[in-house]
Length: 219
Image (cartoon, rainbow, N blue to C red; front, side, top):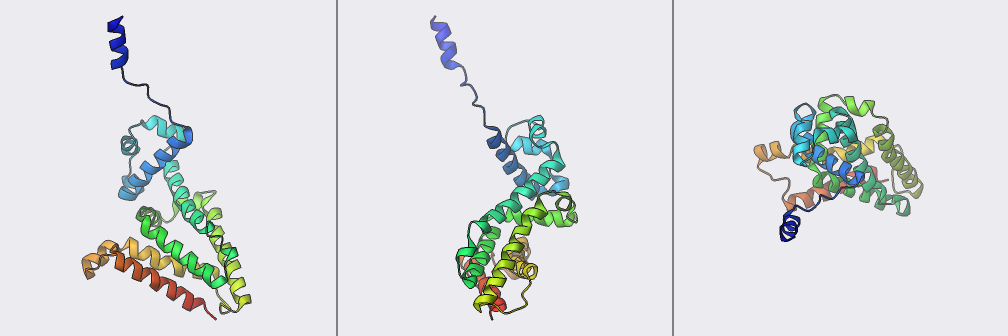
């Protein structure tokens, strides 16, 4: 009886089963780390499985294969950016203030998620092959252009914005600086000696892109 009790007490605790959505999210997190470090070509499903101590078979069960997993990573990361924008509820703000908030959230998201910048850079190296084939990424990302079109129209009606602004051009202006300072931070530091992650630099760049966009748009 004592031996039986000892074996029971010494036995490992039964492993708790994770909910499917939790498991899927853990796979995505591991895949984001893998693909952002090594790109699509260098990333390996074996290494993704090792990152989360699971099996390739389980990853294939949830995502189907490496390319489908990479597509899911892109969909998730673009979706996270769009979610941050939509959480602002810009329709409730005056146009100029709404544009300021959009610039700030774009800047903050890129600064806080360099893995997003790396994965998008990789996808551009591959000429947007996965993005172009995705049934959801173009549709989901159209939301920011629709938001900007509405914001531009409202800003013109308020007398805050000059006429003739183009929503995609405005989106590119906002995103380009936010993206570039993260994507090129290592070469910028190596060449010019400026640490793009230093808090004073981050704060100055945040103010700069906000001012640049607002001055470009203002009436």
